[in-house]
Figure (cartoon, one colour):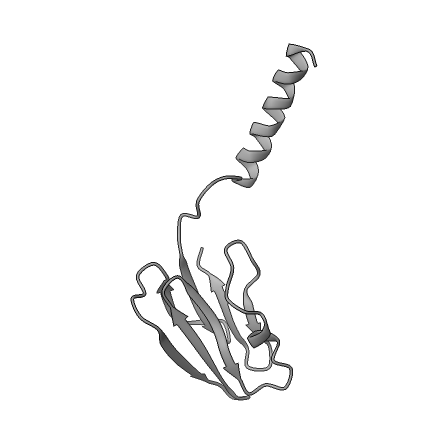
Length: 110
């Protein structure tokens, strides 16, 4: 590989990393619990010291959220499909946890 091609390849890699943030650490570990478009609670997962269960009642049913040091997940839901429970914990860079029947979302804060 010629020096010019190596330099060009290096610039492309730097540009892609600059756009996607590869290798960077997320600036925030804050999540929002949202129901019907309204933020019920904001949680900084780095500040959580002990496990807590949060029950969220809604018009269609109830969800229980597990908030633990460094993680959050839907522990239980009385909806028929259980997709939100099977989603597991909220992952960095992953999709939000959504319970459509109860209109409840656990998502990373902006």
